[in-house]
Image (cartoon, rainbow, N blue to C red; front, side, top):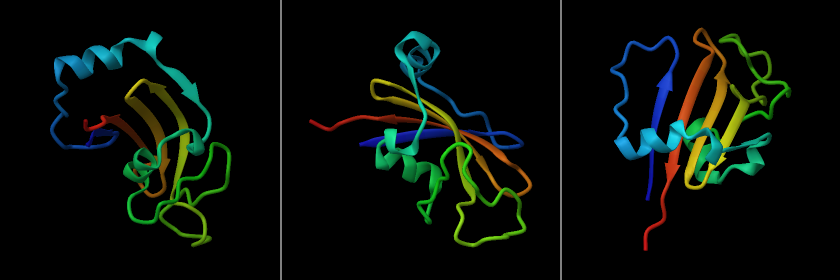
Amino acid sequence: MLSSFAVQSLSFADVTKLSAEDRKALQDSSRFHQVHSTSDLPPAIVTLCTGDDGKLAEPGEKWNATDSIIDPTLPGKRLIWAAVGGEYYVVHYERGGIASHLSHFGRQTHEK
């Protein structure tokens, strides 16, 4: 099972409610290590970030940063940084268009 919750800057939506367990895990920075590539993330987490097109540029790579698409072959989102801590993933990426930053927090669990 995969569950996720997202927080978008420039959002007027309700604040996402985290369980006490999730909040405690996410606040414990010692459990996390930084990753520097989308290939260091499980495909399911990348898919949560990218949506239908499945494209997420690596940090520093070219991407479509505005709502004026210059090159349709480039992704509309780019990884800024990510951290992994056990079954928890914190992925910060930018999205092209008017609102350009989106943080996505995911938790991956395994069914037994």
